Amino acid sequence: MQYTKEILNILKDTRSWSEEEILNKLKISKKTFYDHLLFIVLEEIKKLDFDTKTYKYKYLYKIFKYFEVLEDKYIINECTKKLKKVDIYLNEKIKRAIKQGNENISFDNVISKLIDIVGVTLLKLEFDPKDKEQNVNQNNRNYMFLCELIYNVKNYDYVYEVFKTSKHLMYTTNNEGKLLIEELIEHYIKCVMEGNNHYDIIYFEKIIKIFLNSKKFIMEKECTLKLINKLLNHIDNLKRTKLKKREIERIKFFLEEIIKDLKNINAIKDYNELSYKYGIIDGFSDEALLEAKTGLIIDNNKYIDYRDKFTITIDSPGTKVYDDACFFEQLKNGTFLLGVFVSDVDAYLKPHMLLDKEAYQKAENIYLINHHISMLPYELIDRISLHQSKDRLAIGYFFTFDPQMNLIDFQVKRSLINIKYNLDYNDVSNLLTTSSNIELFNTLKAMIKATEHLKEKQIYDEKYQTFKEIKRSVINPCQPEFKNGEASIFSTFSILMNNYVASFFSKHPEIPFPYHVNLSKYDDYIIRDLKTKLYNNESLDSILSCLNEIYVPSFYSTDNLGHNGLNLKSYSNASNPLRQYISLVTERLVKYHIIDCIDYPIIDINNMNAICEYINNKRSINEEYRQEFIKCFHKRKYH
Image 1 (cartoon, helix red, strand yellow):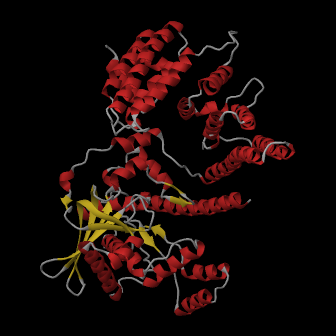
Image 2: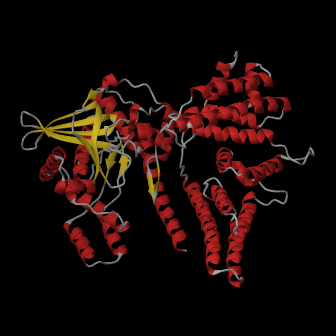
Image 3: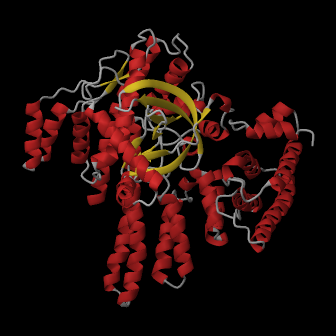
């Protein structure tokens, strides 16, 4: 059809176009526009399969938004007829796949999602309010449609799809101004008390949880308390009934389930207010997410192939994002080669991109209780995190040592790698005692021995790292403790790498660089005092006071003031570009100046100072937010 290509381009635009804008741009009639939309739907669904993920056809979902606001009855009838054919086609496709034993059928595929969207759209197109008066406003129409969908159609997937795509409908009210959720809870109470339809009880509980578990739905505290009291009154009234004990326990169970969720919704409101107070944004714009999914064209010819190296990661238990990895081997001439690899985030995320701007605004990952706010979206992280058995682009830092472990060469290269194992500290501990994997066992042993040699040469002051871990364990007693040999392999190699990167830039003061600065000061008296307090199991405040004298938080500066804590003249943060924006900035500088040998600055001194100042302030704000979040969490948990 004549305008198919133009309309497809508009649909794939990150911006949403109104119907009027499209009609004016293409100079076409409304009927022609909807004929083309139907043609696009019918053509595109022929290409779909069960491997297609839902996000790849976001433009297709936009089409149904136009159908939902249609008012022309003739066009509505035409669209309804053709969409019914689409619905039949998609359902038949599912049935055929099931008969053929297709193993790729899952909830997260475009065909399943389209079936729900088409079903909801057909309901909206065919829905005709019983009240034919012209003064039926949009809220009343929405209310009547939702009642029809929830109480009569009773298709949970359709209801979920409606509220997922049109979150504002959660605030729909009846003629008396009562929220839909209030009516739902009243209906749920009735179902539970009658107890003759278990399906209805489970169904309405799931519908209520769509509201109460949504981050976008906030209820006034007065309304929440009113509903909680209503539920509690029903529970209390059970004492005065002649119901059997088992029946009373059943009713209490279902009513208390909703009470728990209603209490949590206030906590969610507190958390949202907390995020607003500190300017914390959990999530990304649609445009930034599209950038994360689309990807860039990368010239792999610039990368040297190191996939044959026995490269591993070692992180804390539960880690799912891997920034760095390493290998260690003895060469034929008796020298040793250490390779430290850091994910090449810059290859996928360029300074001009909107996603880069949003990552900069976040500055870093924020780790909370059972949750974290990520600096980068999962869609990008999953493609560049150093996962086992996956080919990945990385920046490789290569250290060559003589047989006595004296450093004789340092180089940085773009690298193509493949991780052999993602290990955690527990894995390392077990492998060192019970491993049947000889190559892995020997590699870990060699790494630990190399770490011990480097410590003997006092490449940095170990006490700072010890204080850092003590402070973390005091603040968070649940944090697991690990043997030094397991935990210090990567920390030692990482410190070595960050030291040498910063040392390079310290020799080129004309290039602005974000040094990782620490001004901690301590002496033997303070160390003895801390050990005494720990030994005597003194109060937390007393131990923290002593630790705060020793452990001063680090910051970033274009002035190379050294890292007193580690007793190093220069230090950087190049290890965590998936989690910390300053590492991404450092990675770009490393590629530009060390690898590509370009001698003029890519970031001038004023901009670099501004970056350092912003990151320092944002880290401070993020830490205050984290502490207040934890207080809020415990307050909700225990009160």
